[in-house]
Length: 85
Image (cartoon, rainbow, N blue to C red; front, side, top):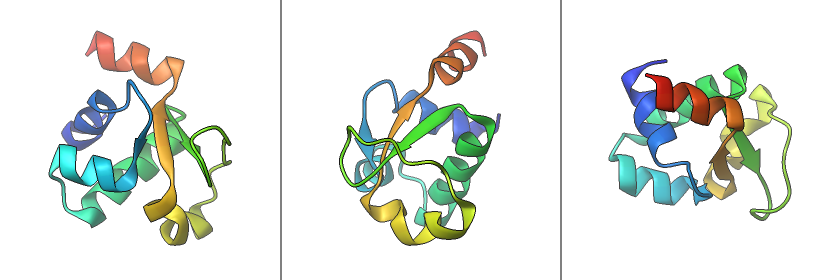
């Protein structure tokens, strides 16, 4: 897990939107997107769209277009890895 991914996970103990994560992590949008992609591919976070209650399966080809409107939350595995680092 990269430092950026760790910082992102730190903000995902509760549901957060992409704009919220931009503000809280202070990462550039491209770096935040890359970190989110990495975490999604590892199964460490979940993605929700169009609302915070509807889980969306991660699709690498469409994620870039939807990311601005998505919500994110750490998975159980993500929380465990975050807490053991």
